[in-house]
Image (cartoon, rainbow, N blue to C red; front, side):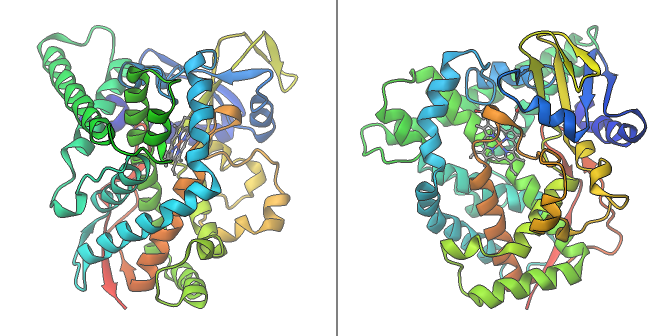
Length: 429
Ligand code: HEM
């Protein structure tokens, strides 16, 4: 994977710069222009859907050719967004979540079986990628990628990652770049896209003619409000949005649990006190409060999605100081927001107790935004959190986690942040 954006640490540098240059500052990345917003009061204002909406620039527009008018890349004013949003929200209701719990446990079992008693060094990205692809495939579409029957990631996961990095390369590379290598890359991208669409068509075809059910695909096939091309866009969107973000979030949480044995022990003690070593029941997962704080804190330091863009519907002044022209993108730089003054002088320190209810109440309400904002916030938030907490609980019940002694956390950038080269040694307890 060679992408200028993926190989850079532009977002991490910008996060460091925010201390001196925030809460609003502009930086350029090749020919992309980012106007960053990093202050909680301004982010609160941007969350107001009456005055502001979502913008595709500078990042998401590169994914439009791939995901079309799927939920993530549809403009606010496109009717397809509202129609699909309203149709699909029930697939993330509490009742629907309860229905996914058994298959999430099943995937956890596959993970633990694959690690067995003597896992040796485990590639965390591959392992978590398998978990999340299986969970979204089975929960959303009744489709298994048989990830745990393979020694390497499913080609769908690889093609998806390559296609996403190609999209980013296109928007970040200097305008004159191209030539033979550019043509080769474009051809490979077309091959990747054709393959991804073929898999999506197979996922849909397997269901056609059968009972549909209340999952994402069932809701779409049962209703006649979405056209077939839009359904295909939604399937690809959900497989992508539900997979890499969640697996990166799990990887960061595992890193912190391995790096902080005292925190891991406290989280494990809570899980064992409530569920013993048995598979947790659905209602128990919400009671793993400390473990949930570990996940929240991990998403604070590494919110996985570097940020999201908002735009004013009419010319306005943000925070009474920053004139904003209608239609111009402002990018909420989430890792900087998550380190701004209200988090205290030790904001770089990993401390799950920042998410104790009284400490949350003491901070400005919009100082924590890993899942975006307003109407266009993440539809899969509860789905992701339930899954992450459950997987962490199952791993802690069974294993002690050790990092290689020389491992230092370095973070890659792309559509999602991710820990570079993270391996762990899970040892059965
Ligand atoms: C830790 C995991 C996740 C994180 C951090 C995350 C983050 C986000 C963020 C920041 C947005 C807003 C993007 C924007 O405003 O431009 C978003 C939107 C979205 N996410 Fe997630 N996400 C996660 C997991 C998931 C999962 C599991 C699914 C699906 C099952 C999902 C599906 C979506 C979709 C479809 C949208 C677009 C929603 C809309 O505009 O209507 N995400 N996510």
